Image (cartoon, rainbow, N blue to C red; front, side, top):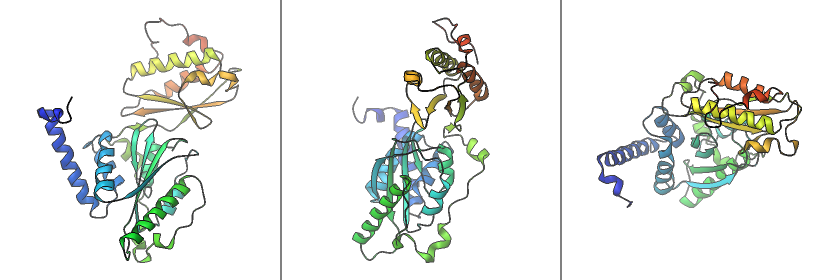
Length: 308
């Protein structure tokens, strides 16, 4: 398929026009000193754009047009406490900062690090995941070179802060005459986040305690069958499993070498737009992690269990 073939259909052409109109509208707001992550998340939450459009808009406007500096890195340790980050970066009122993060569930997400609501939506930043920090100095500078150096300092400071280091703000990060405008945005009520039509939601991490003497192969097969049944009943949802802060890509790794023993905790999350039956899923997973796991092994090989 050629580069412009999709524009040859009415649907493809109209889609391209709507995308360009959105980019122009966001650029106008960005020029009014609004944060890109706030603008993109508002558009996604209202259902005006899809999350998959965010990366192209981010690159087109922040990098190509407005010359933001950026740097990518992989998180070394999981981040679950965001208030200290918001409190510190929220005071850096001469820096406009946007963060992108590849969430295991939600995919490409955009975060204003001064907006606690954005952090609350993603729940955690998992270790080893890709993060990109975009930054531009929007304060007063004698020349462009100085503004660039301050922006680069800002990126390093943000990365160090996300990596758990103790960071002191450079004097150029704060303009006391603008201090009143630097206060972090308040967190919206949880209901407001849940009601947004465009963005996928993700639950908190729920713990399941292993009551069998060992989470062995039988328990793993039980969990596979339970999740197969859940996802068959809710095909638009996703379930992800964690152990000791690590994202588990293959459930089989949970029993290798006796990794999870009696009393150990395994965590799971559910993501999607219409999340249902999480309490029932947790109850079945608890049974599957017990000595009663065999009840979930009796199934037709051609059909999932009818649990949900």
